[in-house]
Length: 164
Image (cartoon, rainbow, N blue to C red; front, top):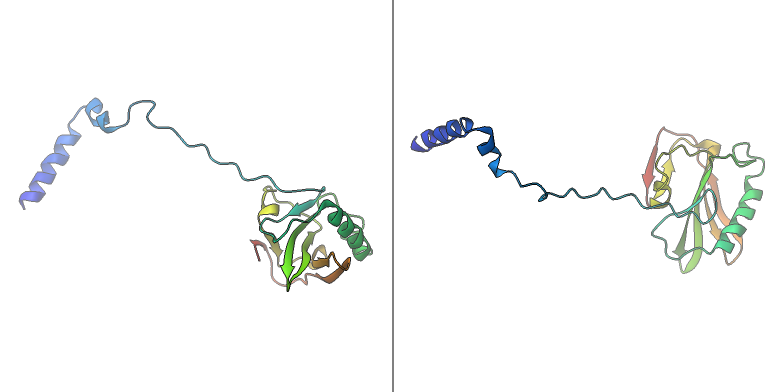
């Protein structure tokens, strides 16, 4: 009971103080510095529309990317979504090691409308309703061939970012 009365007296006393006295607990000017909001990292794009996804086992050389682009052009020929390549297409890639062999993991999209391009280098984008507009592939540089290739069948909706 005495504690409750003391608390009520202190609360009433602080309300009756002038505004200058109530402000005394605040920091003087110049003591508080706002931290700048960090900018997101820039996308890694060695070729136009190609984005290296961070976290790979090895860095894919530019010459290898040019070779992949040539092989992909042949593979995508006839697909009206990629032939010719639309102006807003994107291809994500990352150098990975699988069972001791080097591969380049690829995800291609006929249309990217993201307002956050840094995400293209942050993680692979998973599209659940892509159809012939989205492909998943693996390229083996040692054999100069695409060892796996598939289009996304439309099931579900929406898109998410993932980092497999």
